[in-house]
Image (cartoon, rainbow, N blue to C red; front, side, top):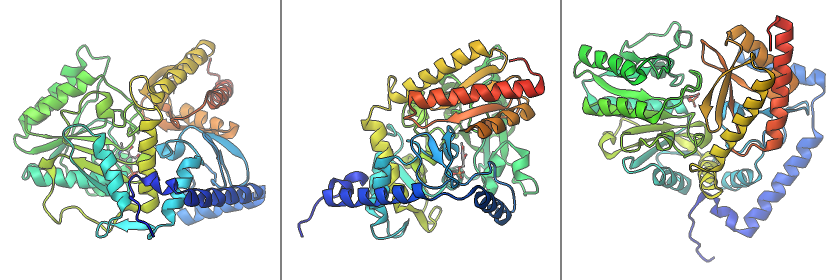
Length: 459
Ligand SMILES: Cc1ncc(COP(=O)(O)O)c(C=O)c1O
């Protein structure tokens, strides 16, 4: 058989035979899935059973099944919901994107389901090349892993090894870093680490606060105080450039630049957690959207990547033995992650006039028009690109919880973020259509009106 060169992950689909077979399988699955739906009673039983097995209720009582479309998710009882949260930000192009499923099907048929670090496949190479190609001048290496928290663990270890004996890490207030023991400590949420032992080496800096007369000085002063208190003992500062769980808080580039430059000057590593921001802010990386590529040492990715990775400069390449682990990721995840990056790049999603930025403008217009009709219910808005949030009324968590529940009952999945105030957040598919936005905002309006009426809140 003639040898063909294999390059990008999607290239298997360049073979007409593979494309045809993948399409046939997807058609068969779609047809079968549409004809299967659980009865309401069986659906309820299935949810209860899953909740018993998990030992806790589901966040939303629902089971996804079958074939969705774009921002629409299909549940196991056959109902459709509009999904503006995408499993907390993991689906770049929404549900059942045909090209991504074809890529997944082709990748699923090669050799192994998961790939280890010991015998990586070409999918690992292709994905790593793409990640580094877009990462700017400093980041030269990519190490794949399976979750955002694991990428962050790897980042933390390589930073600590390089900076030993410095062992303290600076983070922003309201940061979120993941669910491992170390990440639970970097995460500024006591409820997420109740009962866990702490290293006690995490130091907090207030995030950008536009109500301060000089927000940059405000954060720099806190940073300076820590540097003065622990000379030579601080290894890095971790930056979430748009705080995700913390409330979709943003800050101007000059704010981050001032903090990062000070960190650099003091010999600290600049570590950017892009697990949630990856591919959502207009460029592939938020640090590039904000023009900070000359200042970053270590960057972590997850969610839309369909796996996770830490990217790092030559200086942070750790000694052998520090990072490894059995799995680099699933073959399907790597192939689909690479395909997502290729499409974002080739189909006009990136750049200052790219489709992600245009989506943000369309969302903004929807919010503006909703705020005209409901000026009291639509409080301050925040976010960037395909990460958008607003504060309902004054952001009381109980009221926000009621809004989220009502949206769910009416057929729209959105989620909470932040504490005081609490916000409603959307992690939209980057290809959300106008029609989907119109439907979603109509549901949101209905839900806000209902909650306002139930609670006597003026809209
Ligand atoms: C900023 C940030 N970092 C890290 C994580 C952890 O990622 P994972 O849940 O994949 O471990 C998340 C997850 O929400 C996140 O938003």
